[in-house]
Image (tube, rainbow, N blue to C red; front, side, top):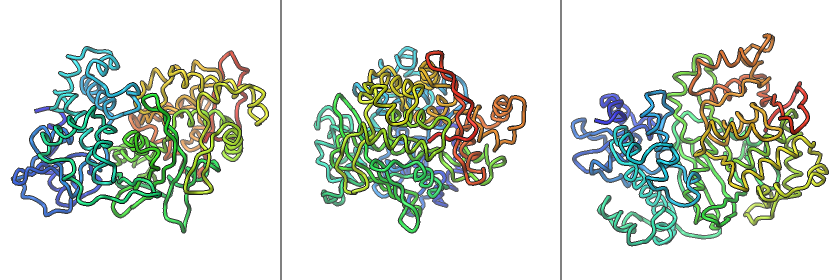
Length: 522
């Protein structure tokens, strides 16, 4: 039996299944031997008998055992459940391999093969296969196959995209291979999964995204609303329905796609409804993964709260806000060094107005894109200076944009975190605080910790210490591996919930940054 399966407690899983407890959604799947179907814990069908249930940590394991996905609860909607682990090195390596297979951004040159995966991990392909099968009970290619099939299943069920298009954007080289994979795994033709064909129109394409409760939607919307830039994003406030909308552009397989997206929250069903413009349909799986990271939909509150609740009892529903674009997040982080949120937003607004491109959306309030890496890499000092951006930050923005445009720096959830943090701090104007902040929001590193943050010092009660950064670092050891969540909870506990203050020391290429007294980073 593989390690991941051994960690499951069947009796506890059955109790969660009987209660349809959404907190465990995606943490395990139930294979029902009497039907040959596997389901999520939240499935609303009649609870099967205990003796007919087999429990699996991943959908790939259930499919490898011969079970087909339920058409009612739809396993492809479940949040992923690859928890950060401090187990032995083999388990960590296997989970990192699975994380890379889950991230389309990690493979901009196309679908990964085993040799590429092994090269990214710095081991042999034989070793990757061995430790992966030991941990998950399936091979890396079987795991990837399940991910592709479930992604395709979601598009078939939620959209009216032609089967040929679904096959291609799900990672299949041909419709024939796609049909063969579907028939082999599910015993169905792809079109048989469509109970109805959604209408295509000007309203875009809508898909469902699941998450585990609790989720503080109001806090997430407030975070983005406080930082929103006119023309590219919008976050609603009461009495409007909870909604986020923004423009978006992405380069994939050598092509650039741009358009818009909107997310509405359905708290009763623990779902986010994602609506995407037709212009982004060819990169829909990538958009879905980025939205899940942007809104932290795959967080595991059970594991996080078990470690942080005693110290931060009011933050159980808080998530770590992400970003749809790592480059955008990094630029906005630099703009916000040592100044208020309002001032940072003003600078970002000027940057968008000067260098952003126009884009068509259904909303008059959203009509521009954030500037591309190439546009900012080519921006002159005079052009940036006219916007009120000081020289030190001009150099940082140009350096980050040049590195991203040249593909020398990757700022997404599939990037190597330690190497990326080190690379960021080699750039002019980027200190440890900014690098940790980027790791927390763009790289989706759950253990990022900006130890030099002044607001964090205040929240932790170490402001008066001789070396508050050192005291904060010592205190944070108890919150590993969820320090990013501890930081968000600490910030939220402050009066009026001020955002963080950056203390970042520029490199020798730029003049030393003054110590801030009251500033925030967006």
